Image 1 (cartoon, helix red, strand yellow):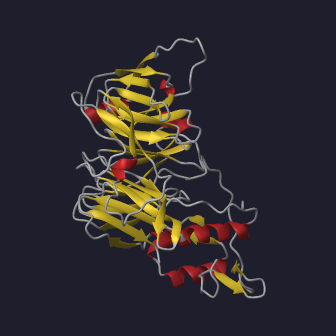
Image 2 (tube, one colour):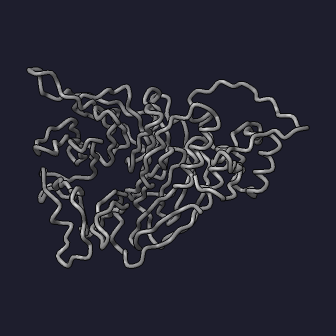
Image 3 (cartoon, one colour):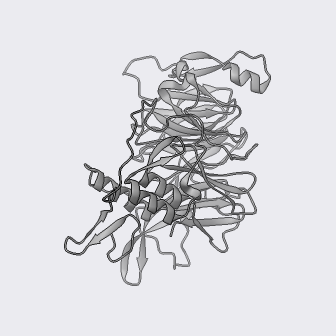
Length: 438
C-alpha cells in the first residue's frame, strides 16, 4: 500500500511502515447492538433492492458516522458494514474516458489480456485489451449461418508482440481448430485453455483446442445464445432463445458406455407461458442435463456469469432487460435478487462482474451504463456514456492478494487494496471506453 497518502478510514504508522484501519467507537460513545438475523443466502437477505443507500451521501458524512459507530452502520431498518458502503460509494463515481479512433471496433467482443511486448529497453509484459467487431476486425469466434457455417480460432499470445513493425498482423497468430455447418452465437474456454464450448442454433458442442475434435453435449431446436463454463470445467450453463437456462454435464462418459444423448421433455414454467402468451407446455432437449435445475426468464437469454466465490450462484440477463441472480440449488423458487434499471429489447448485451464480485455492470439500449451492488441490488450508477448501445463490457482481471485474511484488519486491507485497482472497459459502435475510479 502506498505511503504518505491520506486514506479515508486508515492511518499510517511510520514505525511499522503500514496502514491500519481506524476502529471505533471513539471513547465516550456507545456502539449500537447488532441484532442477530437468519439469512437465506450469503449474498442477500431479500429479493427486493434496498430502499435506502449511503451512496448519495457525502464521503465526509459516511466517515463521520463510521468514527462514531465503528465498522457497523445503521441504515433504514438494517445494519451494514462500513467497508461495503464505502466501496459502493466509490463504485458510484467512475471516471469515463474514450479511446480515439476506435469506432466500430469493440461492439462484439472485449477481453483484457496480458501480453509480451518488444520495446527499446527489451521485452516486458503489459496489459492489453482484445476487442472484436461485428465487421470482422477480430473474431476469435466467427459467426456463420446454416449455409456458410462458423469457425473456432485460437489466438496465441505466448510470443512477444512488436506493434511498431509494419508487417505486424494479429491474423498470423490465429489458428483455426474447428468448423461448424451452423450459426455460432457464443463460446467459452476453460481455465487451462485446453477445451472450449460453443453455442449454436443446433445446440452446444465441446471442442478440444489441441486436437480440434468436437462432440455435441446438448442438442435442441432453441438457439444457445449464452454460455458459461464452471471452474471445474465439468458443467456448462446454456442460455436459450426460448428463455430457458440449462445445466449441462459435459464430463466424458466411461469407456464403452453409450454415446447417445438422452432426450428430455422440459416443461415450461407457468411464468414463461403467461409472459409469452403461448399454450405450449414443453420443449425437447437432448443431453446429459438435469431438468429439475432449469431456470426460466421472460425472454431470450443475453448473458450468463458464474460467481467464483459463491460457486452455486450465477447472474443472468434477458433480452427484455431483466437481470437476475440465481442459486443452482433453488432454481425452482425463482431468482434470489433482481436488478432494476436495465433497458433492452433485442440486443445481446454482456454482463461484467468485478474481480471482488461485489458489482455487476451492463449497458442498455437507452445508451446508459449501469452498475449495481450484487448483494443488495442497489443501482449505484446510471448514466448515458455513449451515443450507441454499450454492448460489451469487462472489468480488469487481476490476481487477488495471496495472503488469506484471517482477521478483520487484514480483510479490510484486502478490500481496500482491491478497490484501488478497479478498472473496466466497455465498447459500443462509437468506440472503446475506459473506466477507472480515482
